[in-house]
Length: 252
Image (cartoon, rainbow, N blue to C red; front, side, top):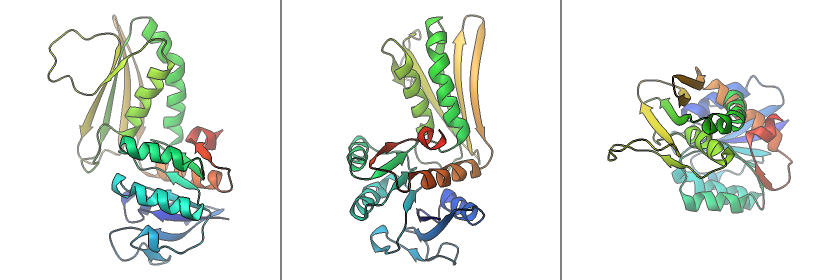
């Protein structure tokens, strides 16, 4: 049985993960932590601060926000607790700290926990160099619900990074063309964000060539796909040696 502390238990994803875990064999949410509220589902110990949580566990899943990231890393480091880190929007200093944390404890970080998105990343690594070399321009359009705070999404950034790393030449990632009046250069990846309604998560990678367009898309219709991935990651990470892991490792 993998015992998990859910940090951010009262958020949308935290609630989904706690609900799904109740019906998942081999995993148990043993404590919930959230800065808001005074209980999770009433059935597990609840804490308003990660530092106050004194429950023994095999892993911690963090689905909160970037403001809490440093405290989460410090706590997991002090307790030698494997960390499934799902929060996006970290700054450069926090990313560097996470990398340092992974030198002492196992950390699994992924911009997106779904199986489908991680397969799409593999596909992009394969097809992007061929289409780019053939003259196709590359843009990414992501859409999320109006409550999502960060833009672009971590998944869109991960897609752009995957493509850029796969190409044989340097390309720029461009997030805003509003102040530029010029022909689009080939050596760039455009990223656009849409926020509205209750869109769970849509990502389109557009390869636009002469007289043809190839689009690779992923649609999430429920947060359950991310919750399943987070639980899979926690079960995988428990007992692993220190290091930085990805969802690809958990799904291998």
